[in-house]
Image: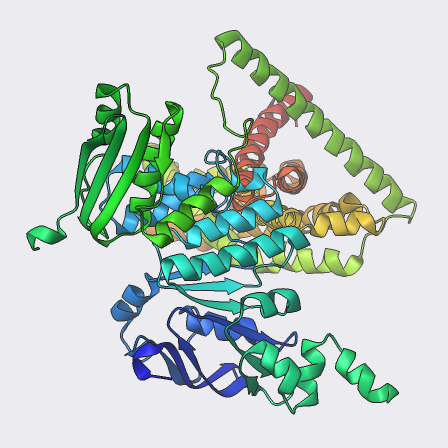
Length: 258
Length: 379
């Protein structure tokens, strides 16, 4: 991979809660404009890694760099400037409950752009339309369903046309059709806006649909167990654990019956 | 900025009935952009227009706002039955526009804000108020049933919880109760001293502080402190449990939230309040003692003797009874507002505010009733 094409680089990252080590020596490179999936068993530290990537929790060791610029090695001001180029969709959408959907999306626009209010309103309408929520501008998060909240969260994550989008379990709590639509939307976002996308998930269907590249975090060894395109990992990875994971356990079953 | 990067929008008539919007320059992250009004004006000027096309060969950069504005133009044109051709737009913009139109706007989604009439609003307020009162008594009834179950030893109330809440409401509140009551005793003595010294009656500061404290100030101040400290905590905790569906989870196990959550809090509060009141009385009198002995011509023994003579047992007991009742009110309002909370962060905040407001109002109002009763009964 050409160094100029690398948008995100994770270097020997280690995460810990006090003396408890969650993971160590995690390294990965994410190509500009690609979709990178972080997968792994429950409790392998996927969400903890994501928290380090979006600036919520400092790593115990190592660093992450975005576009060649150090993230945790920089001072807080530089880090805040970098964070502004991120869009994050949290697992529970994390919409601000005291604001309407339009206000939720408008807040970052009002803070970080000098666009006139009329233009901001049009952008808010557009973002909501992109996620299929036209006309729901004046609703409060408590008044809409879980799936709609998730999509509104995505609209908010996209508000500032981020260079990097982070998704924490995007399909959790969505029905299969909605979850598939969301996958299509993620692919569209990569293609149209050229965004680099990092997805934490263990939803196999969406892993195979969207991922260009992936890494598998292992709870046992507390580090990266495999990296690569998920379909290739499924078919060719020598590690039985990875193939078991990517075939929902069928690989292991086949192993025992034979 | 070079001239070529300035965002520009020209509308021209390419052929009869066909408009061509030429878009050029860099439209990314600019503060001001050409107004879409140009397109609207052109459409109004040329009612014969049948189609609109775009030419973006000189467009060097775009972001969401560009897509939003184009989308707005398309909306305008659609409203006049004009055909819009996307092929001149950048590939990414075309795909986003298609995505936008993939889910049509739900016809009934838009909120319509209807101005409600004055009478309607008054009526709605009345109904809300009535429902509030009903809720108050429903909760009272539920609490009494829970209490009855407790007395029949059938309540699902864990004594571990009671002890834990007692720890939170009692020993952990001693610091703030001591500080506030000490200062109140001090202030009472000061205010009294100023007047009484003029009559050479400075020894009566002991009467003033002693009687005022045990009958009124000790229990009221403790009640208000616990309302702000513990009542608010009850409301916030129960409200958050509601948001997290913890209360629904209790119900699905057949556990009554009233017996399981509310009852322990009320019991703990009622058990701790008498002790806190006695503690508050002692500290407050100590505050008065400090002022009198250090600033007035009163000896330590005199002050203590005078205080013992001044305080009657019935006054002292009245203070404790009132304090216990205030504790019950605080636990009641805190739990009531917590259980009534909505399912959002903002609702939990409102529940906490309402808990403190109704707790303090209830304390003051009931103290008034106590005063009238005591007067009638000559206590």
